[in-house]
Image 1 (spheres, rainbow, N blue to C red):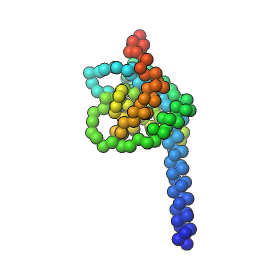
Image 2 (image 1 turned 90 degrees about the vertical axis):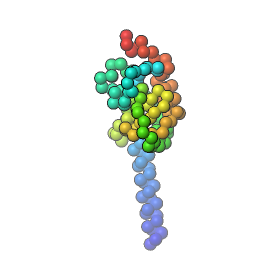
Image 3 (image 1 turned 45 degrees about the vertical axis):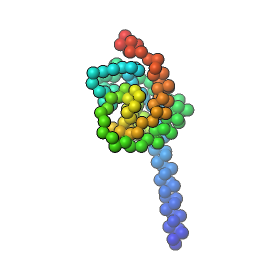
Length: 146
């Protein structure tokens, strides 16, 4: 009887962990960002990188399966960071998951990471992957203003 209980528990845990991976599978990314080197007189919060600022932002949709898989690996390894610090962000990434949920990842130009409003440990790998795919360094402020 004890062996059956252990077996049932093992199968249950296996099914739960399988479902959890499926729930974090990414369908596509919708990214809004300010060009590299943009400075402001006030810190930029995640919610500012949409709304009224939307006309001043660059927009890219990422659907490349190879990039999404790499992004997903980094994204799923994020750890929470309890440090209290002011936000000053430049990139807002809407993560559309295959289960229908949408997560919001906001990043600073070089550091600061917030996932659904919660500070996370920075991932230079994810930030660099995203910047490369966005061609971040080659977008000028003049291209947006004009």
